[in-house]
Length: 108
Image: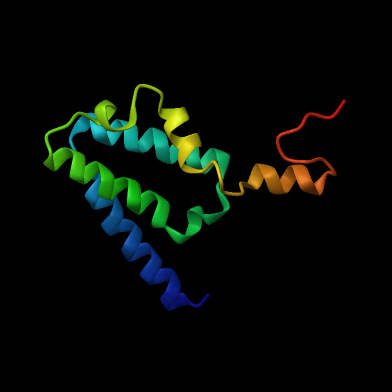
């Protein structure tokens, strides 16, 4: 990754965040919670940006349709997030595998 790639990535991130700031307050709050959740859980594909951009597109469509954010995602933000990444590897899965366990199982 060269300096140009880093600069371009920053430009894209700033443009993305400008779109987030243009959302109504309730959408913005939920988006930031989703973002925080994904940064913590760490789906491996998060770095490519398509997951967060897709959510932002979905939210912008909801705003245009006059729907509230909870009408789109339901009352449980974590469940919404988990459903989006249910078939994705997470960094937690990779860590679990590295210490010899299988993801989703507890050591006895």
